[in-house]
Length: 407
Image 1 (cartoon, helix red, strand yellow):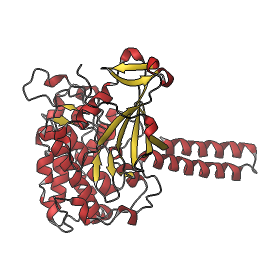
Image 2 (spheres, rainbow, N blue to C red):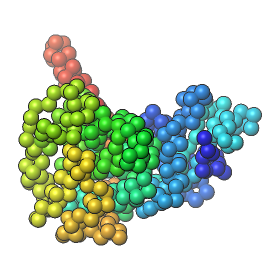
Image 3 (tube, rainbow, N blue to C red):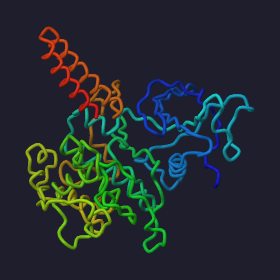
């Protein structure tokens, strides 16, 4: 394996970690301050779970993608540097002649230092922040421009979702989390059909991957853009499910877009025969005609509907590319957003939300869970003066609500 493209010139002691803003199997993400400059940054703490497994593949992929100069752009998050917790030299763990972890930090700690943004799109949506048509257009266009840059250089992101879209104070959108990114296999390549279908968070995963496709390209990312555009219009994720199962997600998709007819490409995929789907008509037009959605879309000539339908095409071969989608006339209609700097038409983010309050998905969900927990405790306290059977019943229901809210 070739050496990683970043050397380690500073340690984690160069930063003051302030608060956790994200957690996952990869480790943690912290808001931090550069002690030298005072600048805010985001620090991803990567866990090496066991020495024998080596450096996590997702971290290697992220570092390689974000160190590729071809991917430098206004809508791609910037990797500032890589640092590690470094003890005495005798305790160091080495990777390609570089210190990456230490015995004191077992099972191993390395930190990716990224540029900071006060919000992510999932946190804004969950906080019910009011968004105008201009917001929807500016965010969708910036995401398409970021993906167009990736796709022109053969990169597939494979994890486009609202929590991976950072929003800066000036409303610049930054595509983040490149841990599943890989280079696309050329059409006709012998290895094109050997990619995994287990990528992209379920609510944003296209139907062909839900059905087990292993040969795919950039169209899997643009499906996710369609999901995010619809999420902005609806004010909630469009294909969310309680069970987080592929069949239920497919049922939600077909319930909105219609069941694919006989002979459709999706029916030839390996997972089709493993599930049963009732024939359903498409309901996308009716959904877009709902007053709240229609007001946000402002689709006087149908261009917005055509853009969304093209991004959410059930047939991957007919799905819009990021480049074609970014050229949609919908972005030119009032309120128009300039392609040179889409965020310039929006008021500062601080005019909509208090930027002192963390609006990342992780913190927003924590606040919602705490709020739900307080409501459940209040109900249980109120019921405690009544007979014990009544109290147990109320307590059971309150607990159920807390569980559902945190799911």
